[in-house]
Image (cartoon, rainbow, N blue to C red; front, side, top):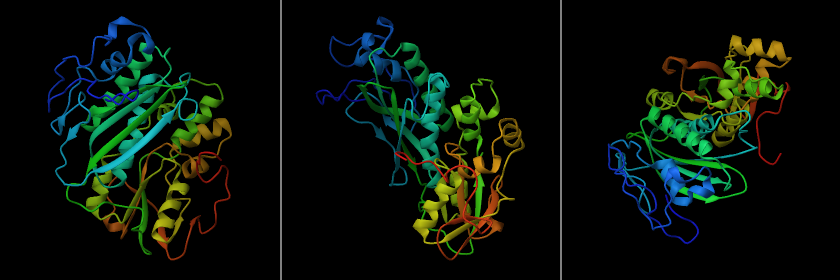
Length: 351
């Protein structure tokens, strides 16, 4: 992790490939240890970095972890898939709704889904954290635990990043991935005659937010999905091997993200409302709250499910659900009509 105040680097811990960090301190005498304070300001910059990265396991693809100006990560394919996603307190999460550990997992999930949507497997993560000086060590520890646990699930390490003071809590993750010799699966490859299929949950995060907005805190599945989405990131490379012609994750909503595919591929995507997977639990929550389960599935974002197009139903992998088709034309429709149901077609910042 690097410093931004004066451009100096070399302020994290050094981790060898496939082993834990050495635990050797770097930096000058102003370095705080994690036990010295209860807030970010009391820990100091280097203490925060220790709190986030110290004594953590690094997998074999991490050739040089935190501690130098930059990390070194193996890239067997010779190409690197790279993506970054930022979570801002009050925009993407609320600490009265989600525990810090859940925020950390959510930040990683968003990036794993983007790597998977390219047909790649994740290889490493970078973590940047901005926070006020009075941020407690409990929050820092929880964020770190969530990020590292999610990284371990994906078989990757957190190899570096940055820390900086700010007026609000901001968590930014950069993810790297490997294509394993395949061409990337982009948004521009869909062709008329392809089928549309999805893998993962749709509408669960939106339903969870609706529950939380009603003031409930019960651990229903939808609330858990909103706090900690679990994208089917392993399904991305599987779809690529099966011949997926385009793919995207549903970060902004199924209709909105298929709109990106339709625009990039210059095609028309039509979904079948009866084939879009709407879970029974989603219908139960919608019935209790007076919500629209199909609307949540079509327009709710942050599920980070994967949606892809395939040349035919015959090659669609198991666990994927065919729910539409690609035609000549433009735009996205549901049952051949423009979406006129509840909710906007997807999330947009500044709207």
